[in-house]
Image (cartoon, rainbow, N blue to C red; front, side):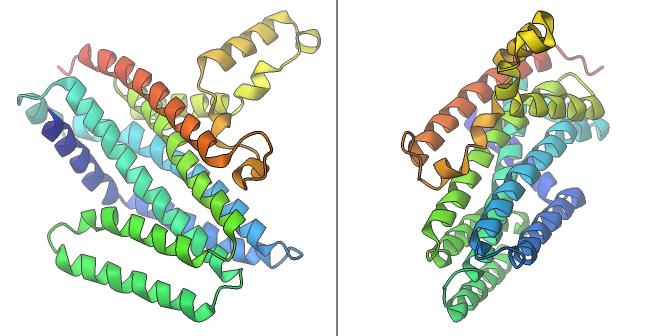
Length: 310
Protein backbone atom coordinates (compact mmCIF):
# COMPACT_ATOMS: atom_id res chain seq x y z
CA UNK A 1 0.00 0.00 0.00
CA UNK A 2 2.67 2.50 1.05
CA UNK A 3 4.75 1.71 -2.02
CA UNK A 4 1.80 2.34 -4.33
CA UNK A 5 0.91 5.64 -2.68
CA UNK A 6 4.56 6.75 -2.76
CA UNK A 7 4.85 5.84 -6.45
CA UNK A 8 1.79 7.97 -7.30
CA UNK A 9 3.16 10.83 -5.18
CA UNK A 10 6.58 10.80 -6.84
CA UNK A 11 5.02 10.61 -10.30
CA UNK A 12 2.80 13.58 -9.44
CA UNK A 13 5.85 15.50 -8.24
CA UNK A 14 7.76 14.61 -11.43
CA UNK A 15 4.97 15.92 -13.65
CA UNK A 16 4.53 19.09 -11.59
CA UNK A 17 8.22 20.01 -11.61
CA UNK A 18 8.32 19.73 -15.39
CA UNK A 19 5.37 22.11 -15.81
CA UNK A 20 6.36 25.48 -17.23
CA UNK A 21 3.66 27.26 -15.25
CA UNK A 22 5.23 26.18 -11.96
CA UNK A 23 8.63 27.40 -13.11
CA UNK A 24 7.08 30.73 -14.11
CA UNK A 25 5.47 31.14 -10.67
CA UNK A 26 8.78 30.29 -9.01
CA UNK A 27 10.55 32.91 -11.14
CA UNK A 28 7.99 35.51 -10.06
CA UNK A 29 8.49 34.49 -6.42
CA UNK A 30 12.26 34.96 -6.74
CA UNK A 31 11.63 38.30 -8.43
CA UNK A 32 9.48 39.34 -5.49
CA UNK A 33 12.29 38.47 -3.06
CA UNK A 34 14.74 40.52 -5.12
CA UNK A 35 12.25 43.41 -5.32
CA UNK A 36 12.09 43.43 -1.52
CA UNK A 37 15.66 44.79 -1.54
CA UNK A 38 14.49 47.71 -3.66
CA UNK A 39 11.59 48.45 -1.31
CA UNK A 40 13.92 48.12 1.68
CA UNK A 41 16.07 50.99 0.41
CA UNK A 42 13.02 53.28 0.75
CA UNK A 43 12.60 52.51 4.45
CA UNK A 44 14.34 54.28 7.30
CA UNK A 45 16.53 51.80 9.19
CA UNK A 46 13.93 49.04 8.73
CA UNK A 47 15.49 47.21 5.82
CA UNK A 48 15.53 43.79 7.49
CA UNK A 49 11.90 44.13 8.56
CA UNK A 50 10.76 45.02 5.04
CA UNK A 51 12.65 42.11 3.49
CA UNK A 52 11.30 39.67 6.08
CA UNK A 53 7.69 40.85 5.77
CA UNK A 54 7.69 40.74 1.97
CA UNK A 55 9.40 37.36 2.02
CA UNK A 56 6.82 35.91 4.41
CA UNK A 57 3.95 37.28 2.31
CA UNK A 58 5.57 35.89 -0.84
CA UNK A 59 5.78 32.36 0.59
CA UNK A 60 2.14 32.37 1.65
CA UNK A 61 0.71 33.93 -1.51
CA UNK A 62 2.67 31.98 -4.12
CA UNK A 63 2.39 28.75 -2.14
CA UNK A 64 -1.41 29.00 -2.24
CA UNK A 65 -1.34 29.81 -5.96
CA UNK A 66 0.78 26.73 -6.66
CA UNK A 67 -1.45 24.54 -4.50
CA UNK A 68 -4.61 25.69 -6.30
CA UNK A 69 -2.98 25.29 -9.71
CA UNK A 70 -1.62 21.79 -9.09
CA UNK A 71 -4.65 20.59 -7.15
CA UNK A 72 -7.08 21.63 -9.86
CA UNK A 73 -5.10 20.37 -12.88
CA UNK A 74 -3.17 17.28 -11.76
CA UNK A 75 -6.08 14.84 -11.82
CA UNK A 76 -7.61 16.45 -14.90
CA UNK A 77 -4.41 15.91 -16.90
CA UNK A 78 -4.58 12.21 -16.08
CA UNK A 79 -8.16 12.09 -17.34
CA UNK A 80 -7.42 14.17 -20.44
CA UNK A 81 -4.45 12.01 -21.45
CA UNK A 82 -6.32 8.86 -20.38
CA UNK A 83 -3.36 7.71 -18.31
CA UNK A 84 -5.60 7.16 -15.30
CA UNK A 85 -7.28 4.11 -16.86
CA UNK A 86 -4.22 1.81 -17.01
CA UNK A 87 -3.29 2.95 -13.50
CA UNK A 88 -6.66 2.16 -11.94
CA UNK A 89 -6.86 -1.11 -13.88
CA UNK A 90 -3.92 -2.35 -11.79
CA UNK A 91 -4.30 -3.58 -8.21
CA UNK A 92 -4.49 -0.07 -6.76
CA UNK A 93 -7.38 1.37 -4.81
CA UNK A 94 -8.87 4.73 -5.71
CA UNK A 95 -8.14 6.08 -2.24
CA UNK A 96 -4.49 5.18 -2.70
CA UNK A 97 -4.43 7.01 -6.02
CA UNK A 98 -6.07 10.18 -4.65
CA UNK A 99 -3.90 10.15 -1.52
CA UNK A 100 -0.79 9.81 -3.68
CA UNK A 101 -1.93 12.76 -5.78
CA UNK A 102 -2.39 14.89 -2.68
CA UNK A 103 0.97 13.90 -1.19
CA UNK A 104 2.70 14.62 -4.51
CA UNK A 105 1.16 18.08 -4.55
CA UNK A 106 2.29 18.66 -0.97
CA UNK A 107 5.86 17.56 -1.73
CA UNK A 108 5.99 19.92 -4.71
CA UNK A 109 4.64 22.91 -2.80
CA UNK A 110 6.88 22.18 0.21
CA UNK A 111 9.95 22.22 -2.05
CA UNK A 112 8.67 25.45 -3.62
CA UNK A 113 8.23 27.13 -0.21
CA UNK A 114 11.62 25.88 1.03
CA UNK A 115 13.40 27.40 -1.98
CA UNK A 116 11.40 30.62 -1.68
CA UNK A 117 12.25 30.81 2.04
CA UNK A 118 15.92 30.21 1.24
CA UNK A 119 15.85 33.12 -1.20
CA UNK A 120 14.11 35.38 1.35
CA UNK A 121 16.61 34.45 4.07
CA UNK A 122 19.48 35.17 1.68
CA UNK A 123 18.02 38.60 0.93
CA UNK A 124 17.68 39.14 4.68
CA UNK A 125 21.33 38.25 5.22
CA UNK A 126 22.35 40.88 2.70
CA UNK A 127 20.60 43.54 4.82
CA UNK A 128 22.36 42.55 8.06
CA UNK A 129 25.90 42.85 9.37
CA UNK A 130 26.78 39.47 7.93
CA UNK A 131 30.17 39.32 6.22
CA UNK A 132 29.53 39.78 2.47
CA UNK A 133 32.27 37.28 1.65
CA UNK A 134 30.60 34.66 3.83
CA UNK A 135 27.28 35.31 2.09
CA UNK A 136 28.95 35.05 -1.31
CA UNK A 137 30.73 31.88 -0.18
CA UNK A 138 27.48 30.22 0.83
CA UNK A 139 25.93 31.11 -2.51
CA UNK A 140 28.91 29.53 -4.26
CA UNK A 141 28.49 26.48 -2.04
CA UNK A 142 24.82 26.23 -3.06
CA UNK A 143 25.75 26.51 -6.72
CA UNK A 144 28.44 23.83 -6.42
CA UNK A 145 26.12 21.53 -4.45
CA UNK A 146 23.41 21.95 -7.08
CA UNK A 147 25.88 21.19 -9.87
CA UNK A 148 27.11 18.07 -8.10
CA UNK A 149 23.56 16.83 -7.49
CA UNK A 150 22.60 17.40 -11.12
CA UNK A 151 25.73 15.61 -12.32
CA UNK A 152 25.16 12.63 -10.01
CA UNK A 153 21.47 12.27 -10.75
CA UNK A 154 21.66 12.42 -14.52
CA UNK A 155 18.56 10.36 -15.20
CA UNK A 156 16.55 11.61 -12.24
CA UNK A 157 17.30 15.32 -12.28
CA UNK A 158 13.72 16.24 -11.41
CA UNK A 159 14.33 14.84 -7.92
CA UNK A 160 17.41 16.99 -7.29
CA UNK A 161 15.23 19.70 -5.73
CA UNK A 162 14.10 17.26 -3.02
CA UNK A 163 17.66 17.27 -1.68
CA UNK A 164 18.74 20.75 -2.69
CA UNK A 165 15.74 22.63 -1.22
CA UNK A 166 16.30 21.68 2.46
CA UNK A 167 20.07 22.11 2.02
CA UNK A 168 19.66 25.62 0.61
CA UNK A 169 17.16 26.45 3.37
CA UNK A 170 19.57 25.39 6.14
CA UNK A 171 22.46 27.29 4.58
CA UNK A 172 20.30 30.42 4.25
CA UNK A 173 19.25 30.10 7.90
CA UNK A 174 22.93 30.02 8.84
CA UNK A 175 23.91 33.18 7.01
CA UNK A 176 20.83 35.05 8.30
CA UNK A 177 21.97 34.52 11.92
CA UNK A 178 22.77 38.24 12.52
CA UNK A 179 19.02 38.96 12.40
CA UNK A 180 17.62 36.30 14.77
CA UNK A 181 14.14 37.81 15.19
CA UNK A 182 13.52 38.35 11.49
CA UNK A 183 14.97 34.92 10.74
CA UNK A 184 12.55 33.39 13.25
CA UNK A 185 9.70 35.21 11.54
CA UNK A 186 10.64 33.82 8.12
CA UNK A 187 11.17 30.25 9.35
CA UNK A 188 7.89 30.25 11.28
CA UNK A 189 6.09 31.81 8.31
CA UNK A 190 7.45 29.09 6.03
CA UNK A 191 6.19 26.37 8.40
CA UNK A 192 2.76 28.02 8.67
CA UNK A 193 2.62 28.46 4.89
CA UNK A 194 3.14 24.71 4.44
CA UNK A 195 0.33 24.04 6.94
CA UNK A 196 -2.03 26.44 5.19
CA UNK A 197 -1.16 25.01 1.79
CA UNK A 198 -1.93 21.55 3.17
CA UNK A 199 -5.55 22.59 3.75
CA UNK A 200 -5.82 24.45 0.44
CA UNK A 201 -4.41 21.46 -1.46
CA UNK A 202 -6.87 19.15 0.33
CA UNK A 203 -9.75 21.43 -0.68
CA UNK A 204 -8.53 21.41 -4.30
CA UNK A 205 -8.17 17.62 -4.22
CA UNK A 206 -11.71 17.28 -2.87
CA UNK A 207 -13.24 19.42 -5.61
CA UNK A 208 -11.10 17.86 -8.36
CA UNK A 209 -12.44 14.42 -7.41
CA UNK A 210 -15.80 15.31 -8.95
CA UNK A 211 -15.47 18.66 -10.75
CA UNK A 212 -13.70 20.29 -13.70
CA UNK A 213 -10.38 22.13 -13.24
CA UNK A 214 -11.94 25.55 -13.79
CA UNK A 215 -14.64 25.06 -11.18
CA UNK A 216 -12.12 23.43 -8.85
CA UNK A 217 -9.86 26.48 -9.00
CA UNK A 218 -12.80 28.86 -8.44
CA UNK A 219 -14.26 26.87 -5.55
CA UNK A 220 -10.87 26.46 -3.88
CA UNK A 221 -10.11 30.17 -4.22
CA UNK A 222 -13.50 30.98 -2.66
CA UNK A 223 -12.79 28.65 0.27
CA UNK A 224 -9.40 30.32 0.71
CA UNK A 225 -10.91 33.82 0.75
CA UNK A 226 -13.61 32.80 3.22
CA UNK A 227 -11.05 30.99 5.37
CA UNK A 228 -8.79 34.03 5.51
CA UNK A 229 -11.84 36.14 6.49
CA UNK A 230 -13.15 33.67 9.10
CA UNK A 231 -12.27 35.89 12.07
CA UNK A 232 -14.01 38.88 10.49
CA UNK A 233 -17.10 36.86 9.57
CA UNK A 234 -17.38 35.53 13.11
CA UNK A 235 -17.49 39.08 14.51
CA UNK A 236 -19.95 40.73 12.12
CA UNK A 237 -22.55 42.62 14.23
CA UNK A 238 -26.19 41.62 13.84
CA UNK A 239 -27.40 45.15 14.64
CA UNK A 240 -25.62 46.73 11.69
CA UNK A 241 -26.09 44.03 9.03
CA UNK A 242 -29.20 42.18 10.16
CA UNK A 243 -29.66 38.85 11.85
CA UNK A 244 -29.75 36.83 8.63
CA UNK A 245 -26.41 38.14 7.36
CA UNK A 246 -24.80 37.81 10.77
CA UNK A 247 -26.08 34.25 11.27
CA UNK A 248 -24.90 33.23 7.80
CA UNK A 249 -21.46 34.75 8.29
CA UNK A 250 -21.09 33.11 11.70
CA UNK A 251 -22.06 29.74 10.18
CA UNK A 252 -19.50 30.16 7.39
CA UNK A 253 -16.81 30.99 9.95
CA UNK A 254 -17.57 27.74 11.79
CA UNK A 255 -17.84 25.49 8.72
CA UNK A 256 -14.90 26.72 6.67
CA UNK A 257 -11.30 26.35 7.88
CA UNK A 258 -9.96 29.37 9.74
CA UNK A 259 -6.93 30.11 7.57
CA UNK A 260 -6.29 33.30 9.50
CA UNK A 261 -4.52 31.08 12.04
CA UNK A 262 -1.64 30.75 9.58
CA UNK A 263 -0.99 34.49 9.29
CA UNK A 264 -0.69 35.52 12.96
CA UNK A 265 0.47 38.89 14.26
CA UNK A 266 4.06 39.90 13.62
CA UNK A 267 4.80 40.17 17.35
CA UNK A 268 3.92 36.48 17.80
CA UNK A 269 6.19 35.38 14.94
CA UNK A 270 9.04 37.47 16.36
CA UNK A 271 8.65 35.75 19.72
CA UNK A 272 7.63 38.98 21.48
CA UNK A 273 4.15 37.88 22.48
CA UNK A 274 3.64 37.68 26.24
CA UNK A 275 0.90 35.05 26.03
CA UNK A 276 1.85 32.71 23.16
CA UNK A 277 5.23 31.25 22.20
CA UNK A 278 6.10 30.86 18.53
CA UNK A 279 6.85 27.17 18.16
CA UNK A 280 4.02 25.82 20.33
CA UNK A 281 1.69 27.97 18.22
CA UNK A 282 3.17 26.54 15.01
CA UNK A 283 2.76 23.03 16.41
CA UNK A 284 -0.91 23.56 17.23
CA UNK A 285 -1.48 25.10 13.80
CA UNK A 286 0.16 22.05 12.21
CA UNK A 287 -2.14 19.69 14.15
CA UNK A 288 -5.15 21.74 13.04
CA UNK A 289 -3.98 21.53 9.42
CA UNK A 290 -3.41 17.76 9.59
CA UNK A 291 -6.85 17.15 11.13
CA UNK A 292 -8.70 19.38 8.66
CA UNK A 293 -6.78 18.05 5.65
CA UNK A 294 -7.47 14.46 6.69
CA UNK A 295 -11.21 15.11 6.91
CA UNK A 296 -11.26 16.81 3.51
CA UNK A 297 -9.23 14.00 1.97
CA UNK A 298 -11.60 11.34 3.33
CA UNK A 299 -14.58 13.21 1.81
CA UNK A 300 -12.68 13.51 -1.47
CA UNK A 301 -11.96 9.76 -1.50
CA UNK A 302 -15.65 8.98 -0.94
CA UNK A 303 -16.59 11.26 -3.86
CA UNK A 304 -13.84 9.83 -6.08
CA UNK A 305 -15.05 6.28 -5.44
CA UNK A 306 -18.45 7.17 -6.85
CA UNK A 307 -17.06 8.89 -9.94
CA UNK A 308 -17.84 7.17 -13.24
CA UNK A 309 -15.05 7.47 -15.84
CA UNK A 310 -17.01 5.87 -18.67
